[in-house]
Length: 357
Ligand code: ADP
Ligand code: MG
Image (cartoon, rainbow, N blue to C red):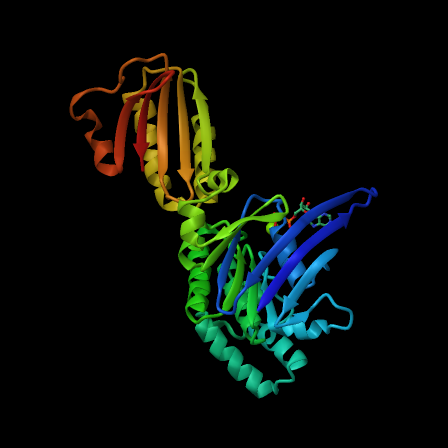
């Protein structure tokens, strides 16, 4: 359905310099495939999506859609717009139109659908994304998750052959990520062809037929979710999919900045979608720092989260220590009952208590 050959994109900066963002992208996408595009930021994922639907005309290479070269002179872009829907991180709804008007706008103008038919279909689409009761409100009264579901309904109203999603959940409050991902999951079940740029690794693994790992302006590695996540060939792919987010604090004395730590831990949890664990992390940290390890200073506190495995750990590390400073007996039973695991182990530089939450 889509074939991309040696695609490149170079931007001219205002100061006269150039930046080549897409170097040599090659791929083929079959009808019905769900492809997640993952990779570090700044590697050209958004530029690739924008090039594929000619929002950002490429500077070299070819893009073939349904057997036609869309970069050829004379190719009609309105035809492409109808075949390819796009859903943006920032929703891009028309704020001066109601939800329903947002959805019927393009079908009435570009597909010549009669208003009554457009409205009827829009209501069906709103029901599909769970927002039938919101037809007559303005986007400003909706939550981010609701706005994004309207944006998806609007894209579907054009009966596209493929929808391109550019980080559809990145601008959302973590509590709303799930509702949008479940709509996309349903579209995947319906057999819609989709290209999805996402940082939600577990979603990508579950929903995709193939994964493109983009790095340095090329598709660095592509394969099934199992290949990319379990057996990546390249070390850059391995490092990316197994990457771990970290937050580290050095606690030297008793008058450390507990409020500051608390605030950063909450922000970290929010950013990495760990809101459900924040209370537990807070309780464990407080009990460890102020009760069980109150005489152990200096101490390094580290919070880590592995996106793919979903494993979250709190490490309390003591340089130079040779044995566990924890009290023996039932003192730790309260914590042990609440967490997944408590590991006490020597490290190369001292001793560590690792608590998996
Ligand atoms: P990603 O989506 O993978 O984070 P992008 O495709 O947004 O990456 O951007 C890749 C690179 O291209 C970045 O370095 C970005 O600054 C640059 N870039 C994107 N759009 C433009 C533009 N219109 N002009 C100049 N540079 C751009
Ligand atoms: Mg991007």
